[in-house]
Length: 202
Ligand SMILES: N[C@@H](CCC(=O)N[C@@H](CS)C(=O)NCC(=O)O)C(=O)O
Image (cartoon, rainbow, N blue to C red):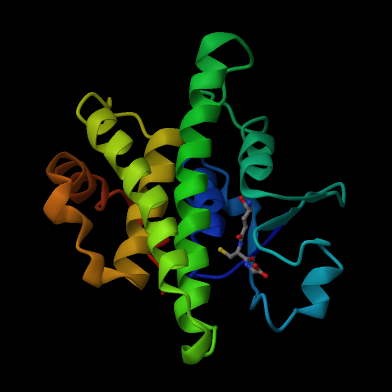
């Protein structure tokens, strides 16, 4: 299988951590791929009409996106504990945890584009503040949930690592640890996991 990714992408990181946690990384070739919403990568457009990463090309030649679909597909390929329960309340709890972290990442990426790509004179502070409010809301939920997280590393924990790692990578000045001590303690311990170390943003 091929995974179109780059080392700065938190959504690609989600799939990359997942593959490592489930023992699948040997079966996946990572293809470093540049993306920009203002400079479309035409090769990537042939893999994903949304021109975003991650995209997984399966051994059967199917193109899978987005990161949630990729993780759920990978979950069908291993013999370890399933990350996505097939039905019932546990399934919707997992999907909800994933959606929370995806939403925080969408907001963080919009902030990044606003600050890094938009010409200075056109930047809209209220927009950035609006996105930061969403990220703060998600972090508050994670701060509470992290207190009772088990040692297992499933979608909630993978998502949280991707969010916190991206905030450290792109917005260290936001200092999320100051206001989220439980999460900070959990993240310190999680940061030494091999899957987390191997996929650190660059
Ligand atoms: N919902 C998608 C989001 C993917 C996404 O936003 N990827 C970013 C990189 S982290 C991207 O490719 N951006 C390029 C663009 O917006 O044109 C997922 O879960 O995979």
